Length: 309
Image (tube, rainbow, N blue to C red; front, side, top):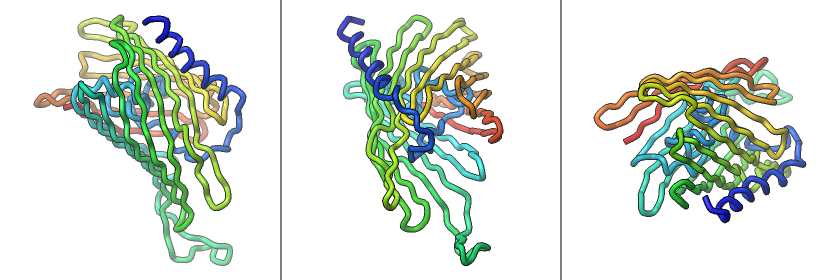
């Protein structure tokens, strides 16, 4: 990498750190569902995934990494969140060598059915409603050099609480991925959820803007086994820096075992996961599962399916 590219990457790292370093305002951002991890593989590695991601889920974790999709890829995930809330994710990526890679992303967080209650009718009015948060995005990425790719997404987020109580916003994600052939060493960074505010009635709330960077490498690499280790750090605009470490053991691209741990996080702690992969009629299919510990809040289970074709 020449000095110009090195300086460019340095600026991408330093500017967000300067911008976010002085802010720590927990609970002051809206659209917090955007910060919920969407992929079981990523969750099983403790979220240390920004440099690891290489499928359709990269539309969320690192848009620049969708260049690694062979032709087309699909990703579906269901997460059983707390209090009967469902969190779902879907993404599609297609690779067009001459003009770049394109993707679509959807995320939805929907509550269970709830009763309408008022001060005069605390036992319920007979009406019911659902509260939901939704994200829709368009993603694009392409190689800048043989080792560096650049990507981004334009997104629309819509939050609906009850009838006319709704809000919307537009935001972008911008990311870079640097990868080498030495044990598949990678380095990635991203600025996410940078955009307008969500306004409910007379109050406006910024989105959970966040700066992330991370690296990964195959600590063990043989014909049958690989041990991938990764590290990631992030600085949200409303809280303290958070780190995560993760590992994935891969046996012949058939069986995957994963573990991860969150650093400097008072709620999220450790995570475990596994994956099963197989090839069927030139289609690559991987089923993933993760189990995440949230201390006193309980645990979260994620189920996902990734397809490459």
